[in-house]
Image (cartoon, rainbow, N blue to C red; front, top):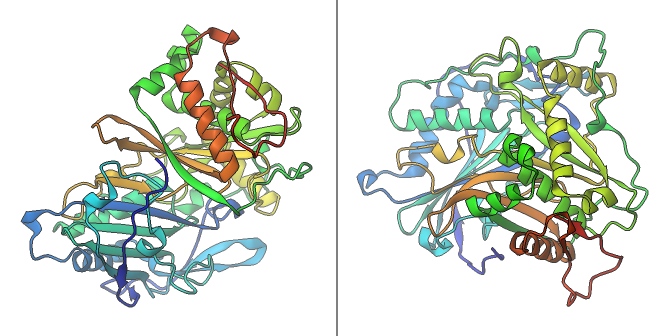
Length: 467
């Protein structure tokens, strides 16, 4: 889907702080050593679209959500505080009870004006999730910003910006679900929130037990960190037919043992590498798979835990091998990286981070893919039913994509993947995806050109991707 030409105006009320509706403890709470790593010190946007419901006539979604949010913050009171940084870059939540930022807005647009297929990139996102001046800092700033925009059709848009050090996708959905339950009249959330961040802290004497190439400090010898200028957002839909096509390229046994995430992530990694036109086939390219480890601890993390509970296992391949070998090669690398993740692995990550000064994960020649298809964003109900679209608002420029559950205009269920690349690379990536998915399957001998010969931006010999 190309960028939509839809334009509309948004009228916002002044931002306000929504504090817990009852007094809450004033205390300092340590984030875990997984939470406060450098790579999570940023804001992440989420957006939800809701239809008009005649049964809710006369009720203002913004007022309902604002009231429910204040009550939810009694249970999730750390979100009403502010982050402070202590010695050795350790992050702590100062539970001040100041509150989270809330904006009520109106827009002269109907839900149907967005089209049948609601998917990133969303037009006027910066108006639907307004960046209040001074609010986007990681430290000493509100930990959540929420904007509820009423549409002229009676529907509304709920947009949220989260300080990622506080929660991952399951943790955020847990909070949003609590707000929805209170908005629908429940006296308290069905899931009791659990802090327990000490469960993911390093040992007193950190001693990593696994290698962690995801945090290697890699020099950018070829200038391959993607610049942020001239970036283009686009989403790609993969329904049952597309997934079946990709699966058919694998040997029978690997076909049976590979998940949709394994196959799609490997395919995206390889296609993106081709589109970036690496000049040196011997340069290493990385794929980081975000793996939820909640169920991989023994015993498991407690129900209600809402901190960051995922690992970033990495697979590494040279550009030449990744793009010239069959898709099965990349799939095997992705599966092998994921298989090492366990509770012990995440404790080793915590030890590694503390021992090495909480480094950022590697971004040089790295692509990050996160599966939020089962996170439950679309199930959040504030009283107007489930979201028409619920999930991440965009890809993270230069670095990451998300697999988001989606129903297209034909009613076909599948996965939509937002991608953000420089304009020339996006053109090549689009052609690469289209060519590979429409090619006749000729086994390993089938070769598909990954570029458009009409493009004038071709600068280096292009790697060819073998199915």
